[in-house]
Length: 578
Image (cartoon, rainbow, N blue to C red; front, top):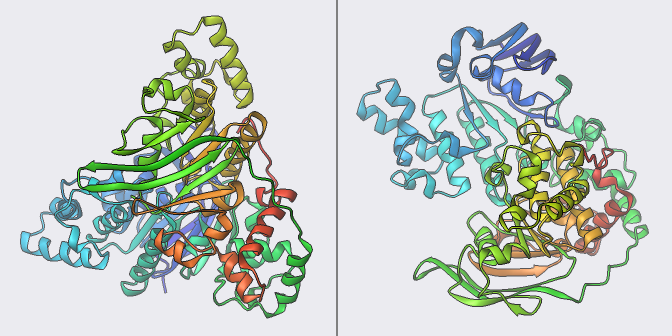
């Protein structure tokens, strides 16, 4: 069988860079294969996709050597339009792909460009909408949809052209765990039923492996480090060496000293052969002791009986109540559209509740303005681009103080102090545009910290980041939490973040408070996980299959072990220069 994608000694260098992003790539993918590409940020994995779909060199100018053939054609000669008939790409930010005013119009866009007869267009749009399960949404506006629905519409928009290759760039980055599972399930069905060649680029490896993949390609520093079947790759140490997060159950087995083999089938915890490892896991569980940290007793924020509606009679939040203790790190979790970001908006004063009250240090803050609340409660949005408004780092961090009329000498002292805390002091006179994504994230945090807030709220602090940058940001947040006593509340879809870094999880489902408990208990409770669209941790399945009596305690001990040994944070440490 002839390959559908073939790289031979392929090197690619972007015009603006001195060194090549891809070096001597040799990769062969056959029709109908499903391949997962993983690697740290900047490793070149997205550039591989750009070369396949023609974005490089047409949208991203550069030079190449060696050969690349996609279905026998040279993408550099066929162009973006020609390649779009062969390979369809679903971007991480689905909003960037929408063109039409309705779902049906958006799906039909490629057909309209091809001047497809209207009857045929209606038929093909209807067929592909059925495949991706959005047939009931055809008259909806794309921006009315949930994250998972938007992704399905994007998939339909590229599939309607009957492409032979589907490229998915970070398909899970903005999805809650359960919606992510459904997305992976749908990709798998399309792969099997339509015999489409599927390439997935994703950081959340364990979530992608919810369904089989044929191979995992590991990219590191522009080269292919490994190209193996999942079972063989998971049994080795390549992922850890490259700073890529392994599935949690694989990590737990390795912590216990188990020597994994491909024959034990570690790709799925549900079907893995665990007999050789049960005794070793049980012994490790007994030996890893831990003491629960005493709970903080000083309440800093109290949310009481909160109700909110955007449209009267259609409540978004109902009877929400919880307390934050001083110095806690707490996560808010739940499915897309559950009301998590709305709750943050109410706490910050952007929205007014229909009922209920919020107390800060025992004082009702209903009469405080957004500006007054902003001096006590800081909100860091998901994307740095949503917050940064000044060209220079110093100006951006100083902005909040400057508009409040703080004397210049005090502004300078406070800005320099917070830049040192955030590891940004050497760059104080740099333009923001010269920074990496992780550094920009720190700038947004610094611009809030300079106000000396008591509470920091972060919306998806690690979305779409590789394990190294995830670790750096989370270790930094943990440091400012411990050193400066700042209470941190994080809205997240990342179950590993919730387990490893927070001691409590507030679970919101369909506008209701579903649970307020330890992350380990939440993620080992099937009822809560199902209702809130969370994903029950694979550590639970490992504990059950190894006959360990208390799965939630097993999870607690695993997290304690990682925190104490630093094992879960890889060998990268915290790099203040990012």
